[in-house]
Length: 138
Image (cartoon, rainbow, N blue to C red; front, top):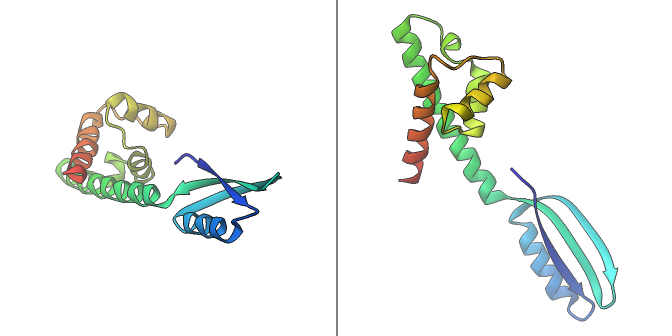
């Protein structure tokens, strides 16, 4: 998730009010870095942050995709009479859930970075990811 930034001013004439506004904002985000500089009339505050709501939404999406992939690979392994790891390695399932590829090309980039060939099951995996995403938006 990318960092976002927002600028605030703590005016010399309204210090308490401005500090409360910043404190309220900081309770709703995960701050990465805060830079300050004094300018005539007050302080300028630059906050680099991650939005906690987006972070929570992303975690929910990843969890749902990972669960769906685990169910799919367990069923596929049972049908083929092989181990789940043979169908889809666990660490790759985590990466797929993280990036949520919706095309076989996107999936191949993720899989190739892990040294795994997804030609055999790529379409099925993309279908699972897409279906999970659709289910989450309904």
